[in-house]
Image 1 (cartoon, one colour):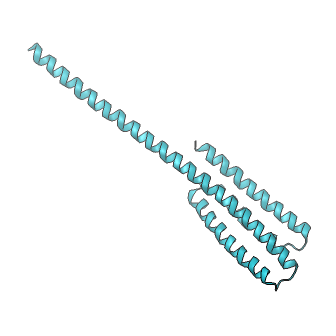
Image 2 (tube, one colour; image 1 turned 90 degrees about the vertical axis):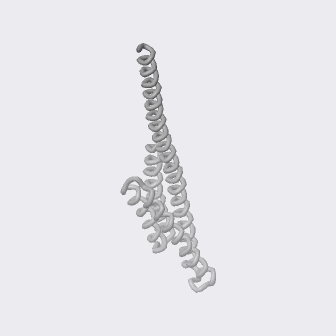
Image 3 (cartoon, one colour; image 1 turned 90 degrees about the horizontal axis):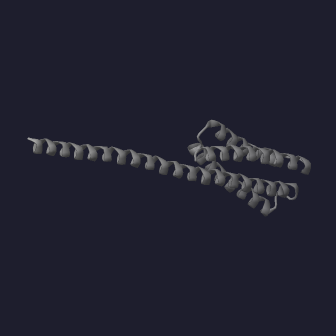
Length: 158
């Protein structure tokens, strides 16, 4: 009888050990998966937010180049090329902004991205070099606000 009881205790202990090992491994696996997803999302956000800032900066440069072209000969073929380049850069920036909207954790970051994008238009409508410089500074301030908020979100996700 003692042998049977000892055998039952041994089997129960083995089963309990197997079940607890399974539960701990499953929990550990789930935590590792969540951590991996978090790192991937963080990297995706970092890439996306950087690409957006780069696209806005390129669009600003293209818009300023167009502004200077328009101050000269508006009918010159290079002016048409500058318009075409601004359209291309604008489309690329809009695409980057869509990615920001998809990945942003909060609406504030999306609003800041929109503010930076919206600050491009007034650059082209500037009437003097002084006004152009002021509009560029407004854009830079909006872009800095976006980058600051994006950095906070990325650092929070670690």
